[in-house]
Image (cartoon, rainbow, N blue to C red; front, top):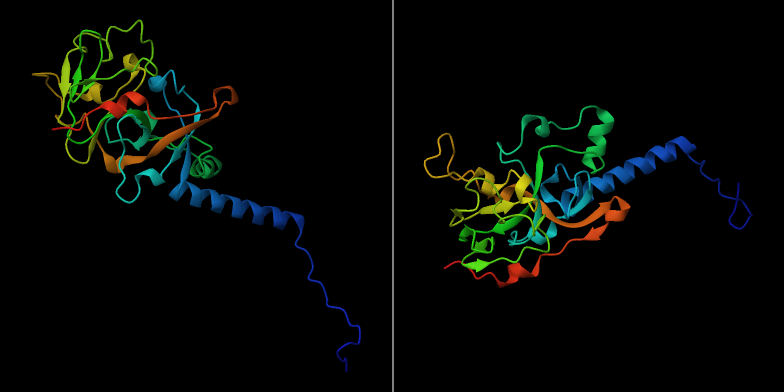
Length: 247
């Protein structure tokens, strides 16, 4: 019989094989990535050139979600990722990843997931947006926006409308409760709220289709993380801070 203090040694548990430890670490890493994606931060691909020059097609961006928790809502000037309202994307852009590996990679933001858009919030509930004044500027609740620092080709475009036949003379709003009016920074190449706005007497257009539901918003874009030469932080432009609240 072995007694205490007899100098016996504890038997060590055998180590797992390297392949088992590798699989376990991968499972833990994927689980942590899914938790982060679900509740805090999610990676996305930029799917189109509609946000040039700040965001270029195939840029990898980070979207944070806590800003819109506990009653927080998107603010004017925020760049947001949102799910397709149903008819904003062509069918080929709604298709998600095919195959096990692309599907898993898309779950942690390393592969395009499909079905999402990226735009800038121009108007929130109650706002009225008018295009455009004699300097080509959009106005929100009567305040003209200075967008030269972030819209594409500010010196060559006739207005921030976007430019096109009749596109420099329209009004949208008041924006309904729970809705947003969004536009791409590349105004001449963005199928956004202004694109879906019904012109007077336009046939085959659905009134209200120009707005997106706040519930569709995944989160706010706060950083470009790839490619390396395009890494940057995104901030809400100062011009939106001076927009008065709707009457």
